[in-house]
Structures are given as structure tokens and as C-alpha cells.
Image (cartoon, rainbow, N blue to C red):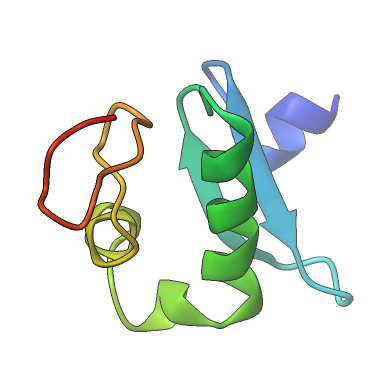
Length: 77
């Protein structure tokens, strides 16, 4: 079974797998908004997963952990 092979024991999970079949990043938990999903793609595509945690990347891009976009002043929209 795929979940046994990849050792996935809870959902939701998004696994990014390279062309050789190696898992390069696993995101556990819900992606609540389309902008957050796009940022997750940017996080992986830019190889940021090698340099920083996803939460740090979200903060640098102006997003709170709950998926809400932040204004430049740091107030939720």
C-alpha cells in the first residue's frame, strides 16, 4: 500500500517527490487557502525547504500560520 510504503500515518499530507522517487518534503496538515498552496509550491520550487522551515518562509512572505494574508503593517486582512 502506498501509505505504508511512504510511512504516512495521518492525513492530510502532501508529499513532494523528486524524479528519482525520493521524498524531498512532506507537509502535514491542511492548506486552508489557495494563496497558501501557491506559497507551498514556491517554497519547494525555490529549494527553500533546504534552508528554512515552512513557518519561517510563510512569515517572510507575509502570511500567518493560520493561512491569513498579512498587510504590510502586520494586521490581518
